[in-house]
Image (cartoon, rainbow, N blue to C red):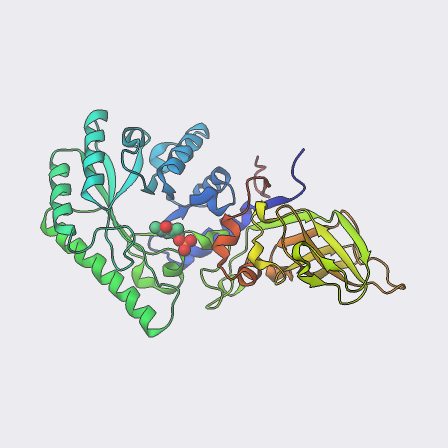
Length: 400
Ligand SMILES: *Cc1c(COP(=O)(O)O)cnc(C)c1O
């Protein structure tokens, strides 16, 4: 038996969003970023949908995710040449040989990575496909301008020796959702730094096939950063990289994830009764309270306690209900309204509670939970627990 809560993923919305993002960056190749189990939406169904929708590339953070993805694509009969996969995080002594044999593209920021990759390529007997990463202003991964010349020289030697093929030169924008003058200046600096790195590579005889910089916010708001390829993450899931700047609806994106659970209790509770651990909320009068079988173990952030709302699909239509008291590990309480002797229960056990739905349809969305928890929509969708079953829906093709 499954957990009563479920995550319904609309694959048609994902295909729609990818088309919408392609319209925003029509001249670049499109990478669908499917790290973190496709932002909680399910790695393989999303990856296959993206390829079908025309994305030419797939990207994941961890090497382990890339190996899982390649194995899944192989099983699905997708030729490796039509599904290049870039991975950008790996520990020292990673299984590089397996990565090369799996035809994965590897990000290289540091000479120690290059050394390990070259050693593995020698062992496997074929060149590794690498994307050279430059630190263009985030101070996260990437070679700093100071370290870059030595790395490029080492790469040039590895290319000459036939140990690596330089597929990409890339970086990541840190403030592409920031429309302030400082934010715009930062994005401009990132781009300039990447283009100077390209100059350096060319003078040393290394010619990358693809330059890439933009993620969703770059795709939407900085056309000059599109270059040869763009990496679409949050937008493909139908969420805005910054709802303060523009909402999903403003951007023509459709949220693909719905999180829902059936009410497990509807009861009258007298006035001034404490609710949940610590009794942080008391009934302001006799109330109808509902119980939802999802908690922080399922990714319902406890920091949102007392600030979030849900949409209850009752027999009389949708009902907005406040989440009250502390979110527990496995459940939380909602306030369904006043319970005067005359009022009938506004909802019934078994009615569906939508925690994350489509705001365009008047439902609570990931952005609402993010605001309630003081975080970003990325964290809401990626935190959804493994305990919840993912159901993938598509009108075009039935999907497991
Ligand atoms: C996560 C990630 C992306 C996707 O970012 P979104 O804002 O979700 O589009 C792109 N590139 C890198 C390096 C990332 O880590």
